[in-house]
Image (cartoon, rainbow, N blue to C red; front, side, top):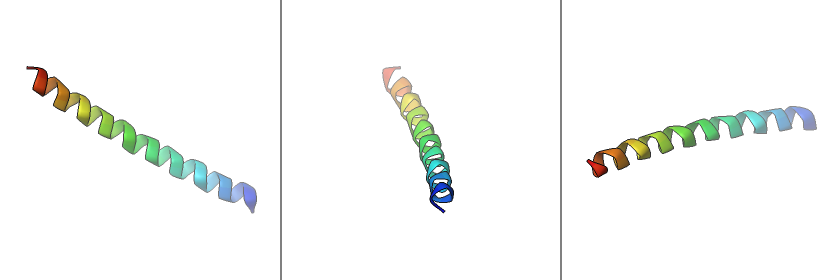
Length: 36
């Protein structure tokens, strides 16, 4: 049971990290536009 819960948490963390990377990419695009 505990291992299954840990696996779920790991998957959720991976999803969050993916979302964070998307947001960071968007921020980089905005910063690039502001720099122009």
